[in-house]
Figure 1: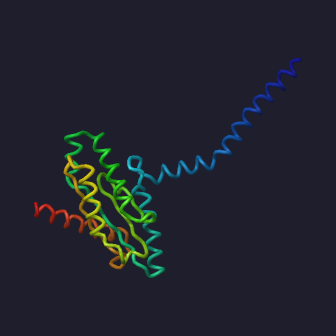
Figure 2: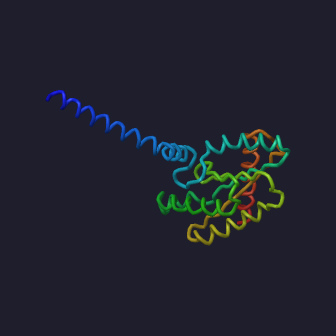
Length: 192
C-alpha cells in the first residue's frame, strides 16, 4: 500500500513538472519576443531606446558604406519641455512625451528608425532613398502637430541632421546633428 502511494505521488509530481515544461516550451517564443522588445524599447514612448539605436546605427552605417548609399541622422529636441514638468508635473510631462513620440514616428516612413535618445531628445535614422525627403518640411509639420495637440504648453521641436557622406563615425555623426540642432535652437530663440 505504501508503495502505491509513493508511485502516485511521484506520478503527480512528474505530471506537474511535465505540464510546466510543456507550458514553457509552448510560450518560449512569446517570452523571448517579449523580453527582446523590453530590451530594445523605451518603456515610456514605445520607441526604440538609445542602446538599440547605437547598435543598429553601426550596422546601418556599414550597410550604407558597403552599398555606397547615404544615411541621414536627424536629431530632435523639444523646446520649453522643462516648463511642462515644472508647472504641470511629471505625469503630464510623460503624456506629452508619448504624444510627441507618436507625432515624430508617424511623420517618417514606417521603416525609418525612430528612437528616444534620452529625456526630451529623439533621433531618426533615414537610410536609402532619402534624396527626395525634405527634413525641414517634415519637422515643420511635426511642429504644427505638436503646437496643435499641446497648444497650452507652448512647446516646439528643434532639429539638426548629418549625413553618412560627412562621416562614418557614429559619435561624430551624432555630434554633427546635435550641434546643428543647437544652432537651429539658438536661431529660434533669436527670432523670439
